[in-house]
Length: 113
Image 1 (cartoon, rainbow, N blue to C red):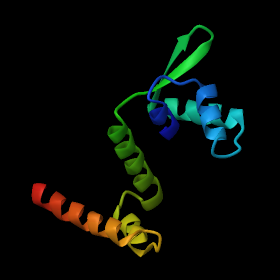
Image 2 (cartoon, one colour; image 1 turned 180 degrees about the vertical axis):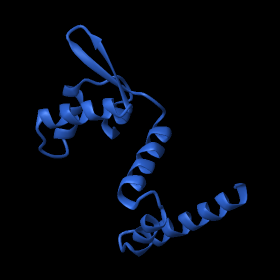
Image 3 (cartoon, helix red, strand yellow; image 1 turned 45 degrees about the vertical axis):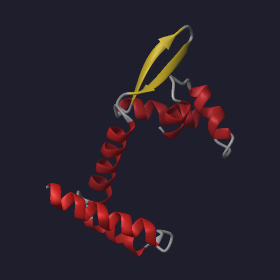
Image 4 (cartoon, rainbow, N blue to C red; image 1 turned 60 degrees about the vertical axis):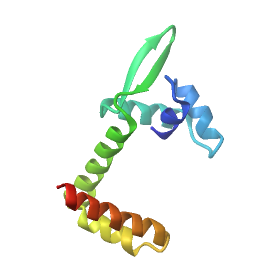
């Protein structure tokens, strides 16, 4: 999904594959499979143009990310965000600035809820 968003246009499997190859070795079939899964989950929409399939995000990036995070929390933490938050707070790689921003967002959300 990140690569499709980065390309900021309709993308073929080859487009995504070539972009990913700049960062790491990956099989073309792996990219094709992942894009098919993202399409099946409703995150990508596929259209036919000439002989190639073009993929576009089905929804705005923030909406897709929100759904992916919700799916992750449901699947990994049985729907509770608290264990995820605890893992983030205890992670040495999370900066103090990020922790402060999380705290600010939680407070702001409480005021609007």
